[in-house]
Length: 187
Image (cartoon, rainbow, N blue to C red; front, side):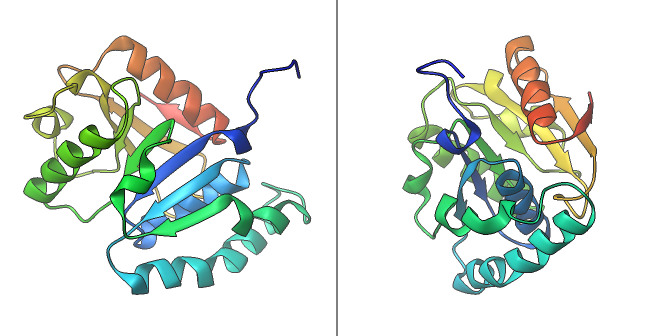
């Protein structure tokens, strides 16, 4: 690696929503060496994630996704918070809150106020068209669908979906990131 080249642990992925799929998404990102900021308003979801990580790590080792000593620094690369402003340094934001269109739209507007305009924002939705999520966004070109399947840390499938305003550059970044996360994306 050359001087100035980033490693995954230098890059932060923010996961907003730490329910069942969110926990798997966080575990996947950690298993691939990324630093993660996990956001959830519910303390119980943050605690469940912390409790779940040893199980997820063991599953990753058993499936051959990682080596046995890889999870040793997972906690050091994980920040949990209820404060959305913690996502400010993310290179990718993944929204994984429950399927309620007004809530997702409001969250995307809040995320846009925090992260720079060039940061892609993936929505883990299976219920809504990405074009509907782009409505009201200042930078709709960076919004895309990033649909994970359960258990996100073990499966290889990922569906990437553009909206009407998603840029080709965003989709190229999304596909590259999916590959870095060990996924075989279907666009």
